Length: 67
Length: 253
Image (cartoon, rainbow over all chains, first blue to last red; front, side):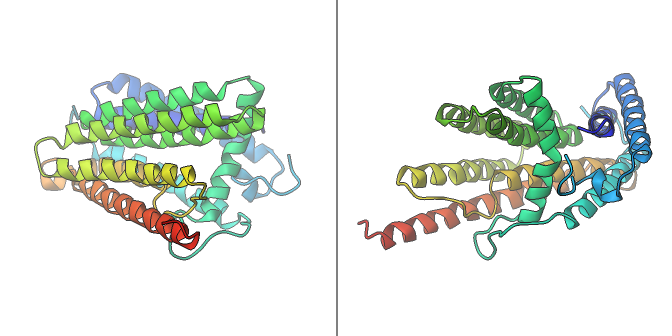
């Protein structure tokens, strides 16, 4: 698995959980913490992706022949 | 449980989700698809979307296999997440519940993928998976029922729950007769996506419309559950007709 992909997956997961806690619960502090963590992880994943020599499609779909 | 209207947070969440969906659509459009069923009875989610999501999950499956995660652990995790989704629905946390439904659906896909990759897929695992899936679905619907307990929507939730269970029951009976059962507009992935995204959108609309309406509305969630009830019932009928026709062709009385 490329290094950037887990960061983006974890980042999106944390962002959604953070938004969920912010919108629907009284746990505002934890919601903010998850949002910050998610934004950081997503940002790092996107930065690592930009450093790789890939076609834009590779961000989401593995091209044939690549492993 | 919802503490207040939060239109700003909902707007940012909508932008993040919108961006993720736009990028995903680009990936889906570039996914090559083998021969796929079309026409009546074909799943509502196209083969292209299914192939794309499987491709997205593949590295995660490989990672889980490398970490020696047993598929059963993912199956039980799916049940736990579904129970949490039910609790979230019951407490009116619809955005959170939607996300948990999507997560449960992803775990449902992952357990089978990890079992196949590990070379340990078999009847025992399939049996446990099927049984846990039913409990997981039921747990989510119980939460939805608790949320809509004071109105006629409770009946709609009951119909959706019954329809979902009937879709699976019809397949189980057909396979008991030795029939292949791949037809069905709203199979489990479709139901996960419909309920998960419906709850997501409902949560966002609740907060975005709150300042205008002066109250929270759950009309989108109610509409989602009504659609889910209708498509589940229709899918169960589709499958029943398919089985009866197949048995008639075989000359079974």
